Image 1 (cartoon, chains in turn purple, cyan):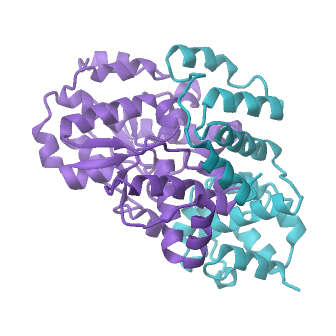
Image 2 (cartoon, rainbow over the protein chains, first blue to last red):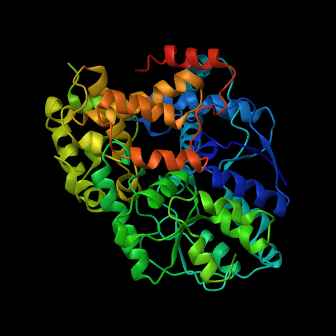
Length: 282
Length: 175
């Protein structure tokens, strides 16, 4: 299949492992990516926290750019995905707002393409059976908890994510890679990402709570699909609660035996290589 | 004259806030309720009671993480997350400012980054935040390692059509 690709700012900086592994996984699974022409920032929390029209217009500019290719747009960053879905929701529900925003952006919004996250595309378009058939290295010994966070799931009528209070798609994907996925009750709890820099103390407490729960569930790593969760979970936990954190696409790359799959591990803040070495996975 | 409740309802543009029957599910699920000056349910009550100044000057509206757990679980679809956005915007536009000053300074540095290059250059944005907030030393020990790991770069690509972005910021009268 062929999709438009919106990497967003994080995937070109602190989340570069996600961009690299997303591209590698797409190649391996036959998903052709075409980057959205001259994209700009989605506006993230800072736009919607301060100016509603700005938040819709910044996302609309990118959706309109993506529409030119007339293909669904894949948005790996959960925060960008959330802002695009939110803009789509408001633009489709409110004609007055739509014409106002079109005036601000200086172009028409059609609303004809679907905004999709890669978990949905891999699970629903590729399918776990086809994914399983491509696995060359079972991730034996890896005991992840899957962490979905907030922005892929909520609000449910906007994000349209399957089973938003107890999601399972990421768990199933990790399962067919041969990992022993641990069950836990914190799949959808917030990590505090939006205040990580301005209210760090509160956020360290939130991250520690998640990591402690992951350890209690018998996990030896945490898996995410969000660059903000990754930065927060990789950087912020107190010493006693540290666990390696992976993007789910890094683990798919590893299990599929993609060339250079292990290259992204060395740029994590908390080095996952000792764990992977111990399990003889790299 | 428009009451505070009417003003908020108009901006939220969804289910009227008075549909809340105070079950406090929003507050039970809020990950930062314990740090807030007034919990989310209390804010709903205060809006109904016309406590405009107290609400806009509170730390609560700036500590909300926009995790959207409240609206997800509200049995009456009262959009508390959107309400918090509305209250923050009102606090800025009415000149009350932000009780949690660094939170707003972070947002300003972030938006300034978009105005500058269309995309966020994280080291530049962090430098601007640190200079305006005076919070110079937290996290700085991590920066050299992140540059070495290639996670931070001063030369990330920018959006070419900056004119369209400048126009968006002007037309929406953004801070």
